[in-house]
Length: 98
Image (cartoon, rainbow, N blue to C red; front, top):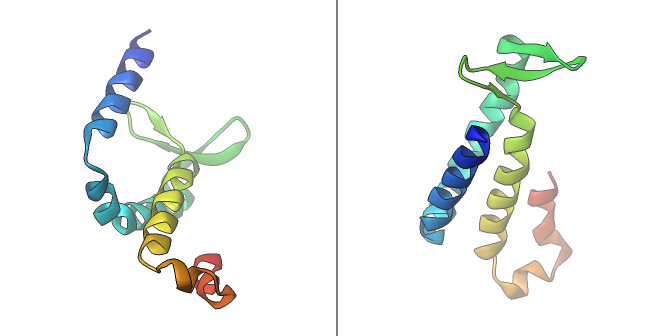
């Protein structure tokens, strides 16, 4: 029950923030998530048969779950600033594909 209440509280706090905040911080969040994914190799421990968790002493974190959200944020920011005409061309999708 405590985790549920904490999760709802975090969800509400995130939803209150202005969308421009997330737009500005999208690449920073994406880069931070990449650092977490790389740190799994050195700081990670095996859980359920795979080494994909980071122990933060209060809770365990699986960075691949954060990457799902940060990738959507980063792609949304990239495509938002490209413009409608440019997105129609396949060349504009080379960078996000990489």
